[in-house]
Structures are given as C-alpha cells and as structure tokens.
Amino acid sequence: MTEVPPILSASAVTIGYGARTIVDDGDLVIRAGERLAVVGPNGAGKSTLLRALTGVLVPRSGVVHLCGDPIGSVHRRAVARTIAVVPELADLPFAMPVEDVVALGRLPHEPPLNGLRPVDIAAVDAAIDRVGIGSLRRRDVRELSMGERQLVFIAVALAQAAPILVLDEPTAHLDIRHQVEVMELLVELNQRDGTTVLAVLHDLAFAAHFFPRVVVLDHGRIVADGSPFEVLDAGRIRAVFGVDPALVRLPVGAA
Amino acid sequence: MTATTVTRDIAAGVGARLRHRPLAIGLAGVAALVVLLVLGVGFGSVRIGPLEILGVILQRAFGIDIGVTWSPATEAIVWDLRLPRVLTAMIIGCGLAVAGATFQGLLRNPLADPYVLGTASGAALGAAIAVLLPIQLLFVEFGLLHGLAFLGALVSAWVVFRLGGTSGGGGLTRLLLTGYAVGSVLAALLTMAMYVSGVELRQIFSFLLGGLGGASWTRLLVATPLIVGACLLIMARSRVLDGLLLGDAAAGHLGFDVRRERGILLGLASMATAAAVAISGLIGFVGLVVPHVVRLAVGPQGRRVVPLAAILGAGLLSAADLVARLLGDVPVGVVTSLLGAPFFLFLLRRSRSGYEL
Image (cartoon, rainbow over all chains, first blue to last red; front, side):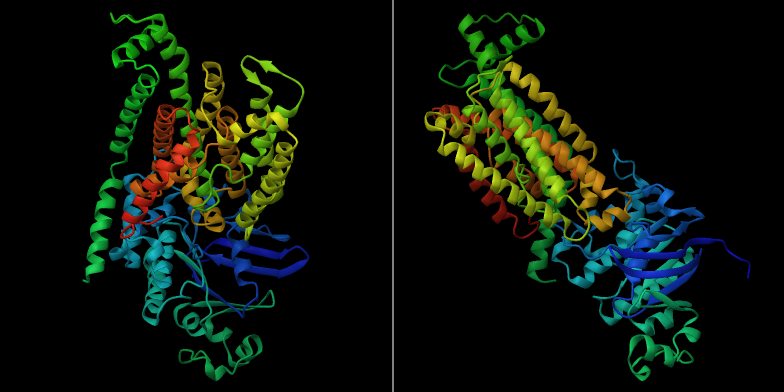
C-alpha cells in the first residue's frame, strides 16, 4: 500500500479551557480515504479533540494541519469546503422546511449574494436522497422527532460535499434500524465516494463492526489507535470504560 | 394517510407556492407603497387629489410641468408638510422592521425587537437629558434631543454588546440578559429624570409615545442614508443570518467568523434603530411583528425576509400614521398596536396547521 499524505493531522496538541486541560499532548494522523472512530468514556475529550481538528478551537500548544497547512492559516470558508461537520441538534427559532435547512450546507459554496445555483440545488437533492428523508422535504424541522432531525442534520453536512466528514455521536437519537442505516451510509460514502470519515461513537460494537480504525481516548490522552481487533481487547475495555467486557458484544475476533 | 397529514400537506403546498413567489409579493408591496404615498399625502384636514399631488411632486422634484394647476397652499401642504411626513414614516418603518428581523435572527429569539439591546431606554434617557438640560442647541433643525437620543441608543447597544457579547455556549442568553439589565438601569434613570422634570414631563412623554409630527426634509435627509445604508448592508449579509439560525457552532463550521459577523450585524441594526428613534421617538410593534408576518408568508430565508420586511414595515407605518392623523393625531404607536396586533393574531391562528412562527 502506498503512503497517502495526511489530509488532517494533530501534532502534540494540548487543548484546554482556562486552567483545565482537556486533551493532553495528542497526536493523530488521518489520511485521505480513511474511516476512523473515536471512542472513550464521557469527558475523555473526544468532542474537544474534534473541535480542535475542525479548526473552531485553537489548541493551547501543538498544531493541526489540514492538507499540509496549519488549519489556522486556512480561510474559514475554505476549511468549510474541506471539512463538513454534522451540526449538533439545534432548536431552530423559526419554522423552516427541511429542504431549506439542508440547503444551509451549501453556504460555504454558494456566492454570498446570488444564493443557490443549480449545482447547489442538485447537491441538496442528492443529500436528501442519500439520507432517505425525501418524504420530509417540506415539513417544518421543528415538528420532526429527534431522530428525524438527526437525519436532517446529517444531510446538511452531506450537502456541504466536503472530502472530510466529521460526526459527533451521529446515532444518539436514532432507533436501531436508522443507526445501522447511518453506519452503512458512512461506509458507503467512504468506500464509494472516497470521503474521509471521522466519527465519535459511544457504541463500541458499531465502532468495531463498521470502522477499520479505532482511536481510544481516556482522560484526555490517546491510549490506543489501530484496528478494532488490536484496540478493543477485554483488558482495555475494563480499564478505560470500567465495565465487564462481556457486556460489550463485539464482532467475532475483536474481543 | 391520516386526515391531519393531508391537511398539513395542503397547508404546506399553499405555503410552498407562496414561498416561491417572493418577487411577486415584493412588486405588489412596492405598488402598495405608491398607493399609500398618494393616500397619505392626499388625506388630512384638507383633501388633495392624486393629480395635484403628482403635479406638485413632479414640479418640485424634477421641474416637470404636467399641466395641472394648484394653489400655493396646496403646494405647501403637499411638499412641506405631508410628503416628508409620509416618506419619514416609510423610512422609519423600513428601518425598524429590518432591525427587528436582524435581531430576531441573530439572537435566535422570536421575541426580540429593535429595542432588545437597550436602545429604547438609551434613546429615551438621552432625550430626557436633552429636555432637562438648560441649553437650547439647534443645528439645522437638529436639536439636542435628536443628537442625545441617537447617541443614547448607540451607546447603550454598544455597552450591552461589550458586556454580554461572547460567542459560544450561553452567549446569546447572556447577551439578552445583559440587554435587559442595562435597559433596566437606563429605565430607572429615565424614571428619575421624569420625576424631576416638572413641566418638561410632557415633552419626554411625547418622545416615549413616538410620533411622526416632527418630520421634515432635513431630518429625513439625514436619517435616510443611515437607515437605508444599514438595511442594504444587512440585506447583503442575509445568508449569514440564515447560517446563524443553526447556532454558533454550526455557523462556524459553515465558514463564518461568528463573533465578527454578529458584531457587524448588531452594529448595523442598532444604527438603523438609533436613527429611527432619534427622529420619531419610540414606536413599538412594527419591529417585532413585521418580520413574523413576512416569515409566515415566505418562510425564514433571510434573502426574502429582509427586503420584504423593509417593504411591509414601510407600508405598515405609513398606513398607521395616516390613520393616526385621521383620528386627530393620536400617537402612531397606539394605531400600530391596535390595528396590527389583531391582524397578527388572525395570521397566527390561521397558520396553525402549517408553518408556525
């Protein structure tokens, strides 16, 4: 396998708010076309690491590189065209049809004064189609269930059509069928379209089953990084998550 | 398919058809503004026909003679009194409605109005101080009152933004609460000023009620660039408003410098509000409700909401001022609330099935 240059990388990043250190001396190299899951107990620093990797939080020390450039030196719009982040579930202040919300994903692309071009509308249609929310298109987002809204916000990020897709707990509100569908969608985006996928997940079984690379974060440190079979052994599950590994059903060979 | 989903789909279909015709609504709005202009100039203690109005306006503004004759009194009424007043009502209504739409979007709060950052109390306190000061300053029709009201509004908005304007987590709530807190301090000072004002109370009170009696060409010419300029710049940034609807974090990920954009938009909206308040005092309701009416008609997209709010705001305030004059110069704020609020309630009830606020 030839060495692909890193598309996104963190070198020795330490991230904190005020005096509190959340992520300590983290190193992570993500290559174009990879699909990796970040797992770890609550408060381990997963979301904070994502915020630094996506350029919205400046690390106290260390650097994040996007396609070889320090992410702080890349224009925000250019970052937004390269990294799509599934937004957290926000309550919209006004009624807004699903398709208009998904169209917000085109903001980094569309000319600021002219609005949506045909190419933008095509991207919105494709994103809605991909996530399978065509029947919700004209519904007001605010009257949807949490799970439906989660799918809408995933579609926002897909409409952004960026080479890197970042998701923080993308399945938290979904029923089991939609959880699996979202996971399969991520695999398909990665394998068919070559999108680099980076997801924070709570479900270790999903991480092990759908992701070839798993990064374990504990108390702000990256304690393991590799294939699920190497990373999610019984000892580490007990040590990091403090639960009986038998409670976690991993695919055969992982545990 | 259940009956409720059918109703919802029908409602959504109607809404969708309207939403795809913002241009038609806009053109109809502009036509309505022209009609309102003629009505506003024509009606009053003396009635003036549309031809005479057209004649005077063309003659005075462009030097074109269309062969209609009128008396000098008619000309004075049309050109010096009513036309500046009607145009002022339109400009102020436009400014308040656009500022309201901007504040509601930026603060992600449907209850926000142009005065949410304490601009109202700031302006009123400025006006009260001007009334109480023993100095009479007059500079081409601009008294101390206009100047201090304008400054008071801008300074209070600036103070609120400096004290409460952080991005991230609870930033918006903090900004809103800071606005209320600063507003309360200013309102207390205003009450104090009114308490000690004695015979000047009436003057302060009339500022609080708001009105367009003080309209003149000079005042209009100073306020117009401020208000129209701010509105145009806000329109140019209307997609930023859309992005911010998703919240600060998401807007950041969509490529916006959230803190900077919010500062710019709050500044522009405060500028429009301050200019409006300085000329006409505190006129309520327009800035709160017009943006909602527009959203009910065309959805929440900033590129549609901002220009249509400008048109509807202008129309609503000039119509309200006409009614107020016909009723014997009652304060215009009374009319906007008395006529506007029931209409708004009607819209709210009708829209229950499809798109709510």
